[in-house]
Image 1: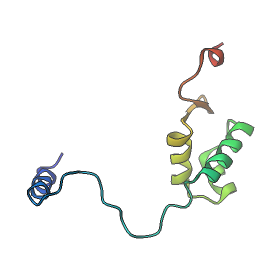
Image 2 (image 1 turned 90 degrees about the vertical axis):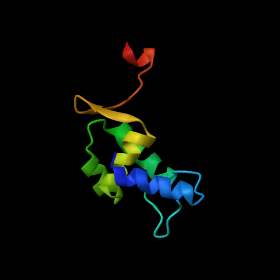
Image 3 (image 1 turned 120 degrees about the vertical axis):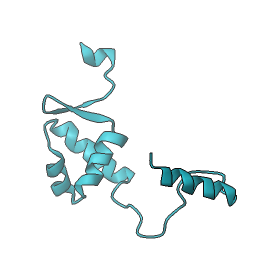
Length: 95
């Protein structure tokens, strides 16, 4: 952590700031990372567990960074031996 960041936080607290959470920003909202696209990505992975992020991105016309976020963060998949599998396998899946 940089000392300049610590000094900035101290300055914010002196000015009355009580949280380190980011303030809402203006600009274009993230429209690619929504429930509809999450369902479409999940369906593509269930059809072909060997599908690549780039292929999903091209098929759904979603930026690859958003596809990565959906697959890893929202759906909880990870790549194992060239296949997408859930991070937490149940006892039933392990058999």
